Image 1 (spheres, protein in one colour):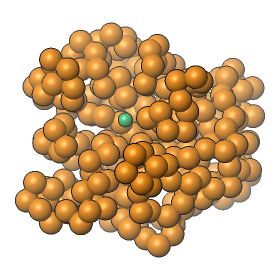
Image 2: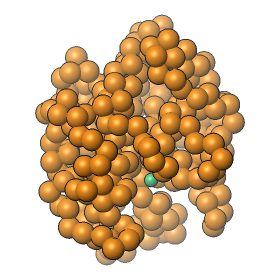
Image 3: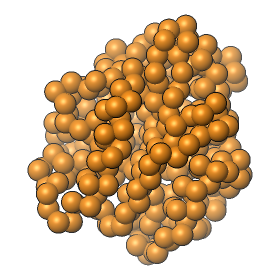
Length: 280
Ligand SMILES: [Fe+2]
């Protein structure tokens, strides 16, 4: 049986990818960021999952404003790296797992989640930055990846509760797959403060740590936070945090928090990282 053994929550800020690609990791501004991810990277090397389910959002690269699926699963054999305006990031293409992805779609649709099937897709920093942070700079990624793209770009975004329920359905889907696989699920996206507009940099330091506490101890409460509260309390990009609730829902009731890191500033905002191991 395949099992989701752990969840990783992490920012996917593009500036972090650029800092790594341009060799700036030793610059004083970036040192605390990359140092903060070091234990997470070591944890990942030790854990060595077979498959990663990467919950992230596309930033108008795979999809444009003509079609915006709420939940989309990448079912391709391979996902090329998107050119986001300055050339594709110099990272290996992402290997998929079409059979397991198709099974997940089937199971989720029968479980009444209407998933968009994507058979050809480029992946942007939303997916590649978390890969770089947790897996470093290998010649080839050591894991197969099932991308799960969530719309948090064009309102309405799905609610936290819908995301949490989807996570639970993902757990059921994975456990119905008859192959011994270690699966790690990622929830990615912006941790506050806000980046653009008049509220840029608004200190909302309390929101992210409280969210991380809730993720570990009381996800049911987090799942009830309405979308407007993310915006009001933590700025417009904070809605990306609903993707962390998909990850949390997929871990089951009991988890153990094995690592947490939160740091300001990074690319004019914050970075956050949490690792939760499923405990049944
Ligand atoms: Fe994003």
